[in-house]
Amino acid sequence: MLQAVKNGIEKIKKQRFLFEELVKRDFKKKYKRTVLGMLWSLISPLMQLLVMSVVFKSFFGAGQPHYTIYLFAGNLTYAFFKDSTYGGMNALMQNAGIITKINLPKYMFLLSKNVASLINFGLTLVVFFIFVAVDGVPFHARFLMLIYPIVCLIIFNIGCGFILSALFVIFKDVQYLYDIFTLMLMYLSAIFYTTTGYSENVQKLFYANPIYVYITYIRHIVLDGYIPGLATHGLCLLYAVLALAVGALIYKKYNYKFMYYM
Image (tube, rainbow, N blue to C red; front, top):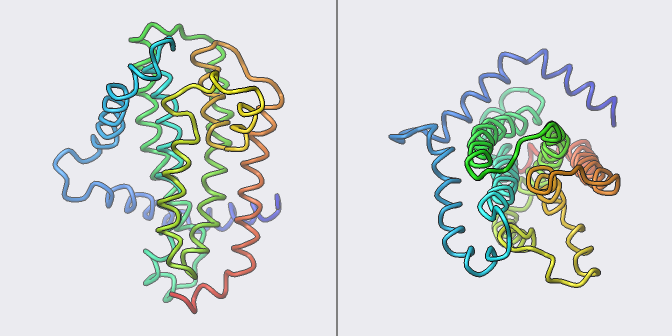
C-alpha cells in the first residue's frame, strides 16, 4: 500500500500543472455566478450553526458549557466529511469527457475535489478558532494535536471518495442511498447532543462511527483541554487507513472497467 501511495504521489508530481488547474477549476466552479463567491464557504456553516444553536440549545445545550463551540466542532467536522465525499463521489462522472479522451490517473480528479474541500474547511476552521476565542475557551499548546485527527480525517475522506466514486460509476443509485446515509450519519454523530445520558455500553457503540471519533477527539482537545488516549488515536488511524486501503483496492481492481460505464 505504501508503494502504491508513493507511485501515486510521483504521478501527481509529473502532472503537477494539470492537478493545480483541476483544483482551481473545482474551487471556482463551486462559487461560479454567485455574488459573494468564496464568502459562502464562511457564511454557509455560520448560518447552519446559528439555526442549529437556536433550535437545539434549549433542548440539549442547557447543561453543556460552551455549547456553541461544542456544536460548531461537530458541524465543522461533519460538513468537511460530507462536502469532501460528495465531491469525490461525482469526481469521475463529472470528468468523464476528459477521462474517456485522455489517459490520465483517474484519482487526480478525486484528489482535486478533496483539496478544494480542504480549502473550504481551512477557511471555516479559522472562523471556528475566532468563536473559540470569543467564547472564552483558553488556547493551549495541546491545540497543536488537532493536526492528528484532521490528517486522519483527510485520509478517511479520500478513501471514502475512492469507494463512492467507483460505485457511482457503476451504480447510479449510490447518490440517493448516500443522501439517506449522510442524514442518518448526522444524527448518529452526536453533533448537537451529548452521549453522557446513554449507558456505558451505548456510549461505546458510538465509537463504531468514524465521524464521531474525529469529532470527539477535537472536542476533547478544545473543550476538555486534554489529549485523548491511545485507543482514540488508534481508532482515528485505523478508520483512515482502512478506508484508504479499501478504496485503493477497488480502484486497482475496477480501474480499466470504468471506461465501459462512462
